[in-house]
Length: 256
Image (cartoon, rainbow, N blue to C red; front, side, top):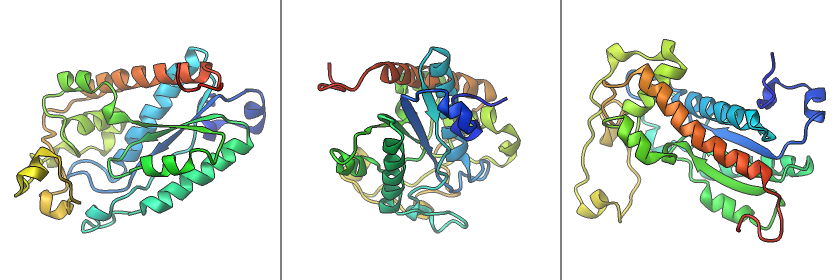
């Protein structure tokens, strides 16, 4: 049976029978995640989170729909690993622009980009679109949601294929996880204090930073932790979607 909050499962009659207030666009990536997680990790995670958050919002009466995902991201610093697929940020921004134009034509006033990959930098492109469309654009990066709660749940979340992502994959795509291959995910430190403290920045070639592309130890991950993470993250995102769907766009939106 079709899920009314997932656009790819709906028919024309289904879509015509509802007024959609908020569209959610999940964006992932195609890149290695250590030795134990699949290349589609970022996409699997963001789709599962988007669909569950939309489900919860729909059950509370919000008119929301999850758009089909985009499975590629900005991955130039991982191209040394085979079959990493890299999309330039300007290309990604154009994809967003075209989707927004389509939604505007169909009367959608609000869109949430749910980002599943840290290399995707949408803010500049969204600022550029401001004033050029009637669609209000919002950005949510799921790993920043309920960050304090996440830190309580996992000992070492890790940045890439660590305990948090591995737990999520054990919940979402358990048949694709190879825990027998998991390694500690150790990384090299910067030589410069400014970079370590984060007030200076540089691109990080992943083959120099990591051993096998993983950052963070995944070996304490579990399906139970993944289930709890999904619930924590989607509870908070769905609250936002409900409020967004029920708030009219007026002369002071999105301010009080």
